[in-house]
Image (cartoon, rainbow, N blue to C red; front, side, top):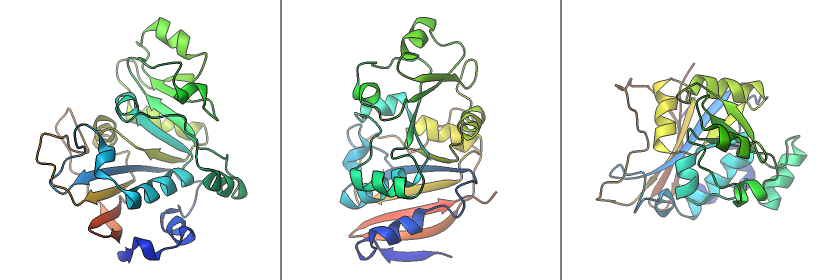
Length: 244
């Protein structure tokens, strides 16, 4: 059933209920992206410049509900990610609901060109996962294994089906992807995406920003169902799902 609600009219508990999975034991591969109304995923190279307080509120709820946040290494660097640590209120909610205080953090990287001294690793509340390829540089792998669990999800490319299977095998059923376009494109192309939470920002980017998906092979259209729309001023926050 499609619903339209004013975001500001929802309490935190109502917002959590709107996005909470019906059964946490069932897999849910969910992505959260923002786009300008003319289709750009970034402004001057950053997705954060398209968002705002309303988008951030939903963003925080999606992290609060998931088992693992998955992000590509390029997005990690471009957006300036730190440790995957939630605010105290969200961490308390998770603990009260039988979850670890902070979600796991999985970084997708073929080249393993990651800064071992960054907060991502040095201040991590949980040991991060690095999802990589069997042919990755051996020296970089050995260095990263001191601060993270390094897992192969393919020999020459990170295969989405192996990526999802690896996370599910670790009991991380609620999988939350935050980008970037190549990672989302791979999930879409391999039909691994179950939900898309898309914020439509009331901005005309007017440049050459990328779309939210980048697919190297011929695309295969995937039909989605609109579950709900939240309105915050002129911004729309939508959730779409794919029936399995």
